[in-house]
Image (cartoon, rainbow, N blue to C red; front, side, top):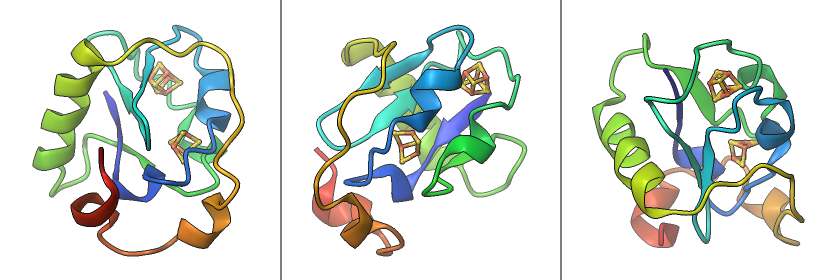
Length: 104
Ligand code: SF4
Ligand code: F3S
């Protein structure tokens, strides 16, 4: 599966939603997650994210994000169409460790 990670938080550009062939993104207030059982591993969303927040689960050190994506994909609503990104998205692009301060 592919996994949404820290830099999505408060950026939430949603370009990923437009290209996913199986609509397996789920929307929280400040970020999206990927449902690990629905993702078909096509990889097309990865280069589309301007924040480079989507990574393959073959990368190391993703345990927390794998758990978080799986958990919230069950709790948050599905998103199949791109919405309006936050007005201040660019200000948050690249800010380190956003999870601790901004995840909700
Ligand atoms: Fe969707 Fe493919 Fe990205 Fe998985 S890898 S979330 S199926 S676009
Ligand atoms: Fe987040 Fe990137 Fe999608 S910032 S909403 S994973 S395009």
